[in-house]
Amino acid sequence: SLAKLERIILVCGRYAGIDQRAINRLIDEELSIGDYVLSGGEIPALAVMESVSRLVPGVLGNQDSAACDSFPQRLEFNQFTRPRIFLDEEPPQVLLSGDHRKIQEQRQKESLRKTLLRRPDLLLSYPPDENEERILREIKKELVQN
Image (tube, rainbow, N blue to C red):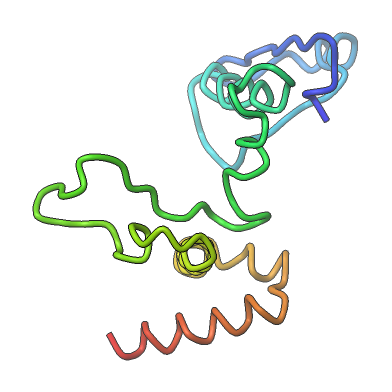
């Protein structure tokens, strides 16, 4: 993992990229953050710095945050902050209930819903377990009814 390295130097290409000779002689590893066409490598470098730095001990106030930010290989559940009512909309009541088990279940369900709708490829690459399969059936049923 990049977070375990003592030092990282990110070399940002511009327009067509970096001269292959420089890559051959100076670059240890090439990274990609996805299929994008950008003018330069600065934004991808920032994405790498943001995602890697949070894994370095002491960077986050609570190190558990890095592990708990989302379900493994699934998109993150919906976030709700204050005020409680925003543009006449409230968060789901279960999130206000104080029942930690139900809150966790709701978050997992929303994570799976988002993954199904936005990144179904993740469900193929990282197949759901029995519990996730059950939740996905519920979600699909709800989607058909609505």
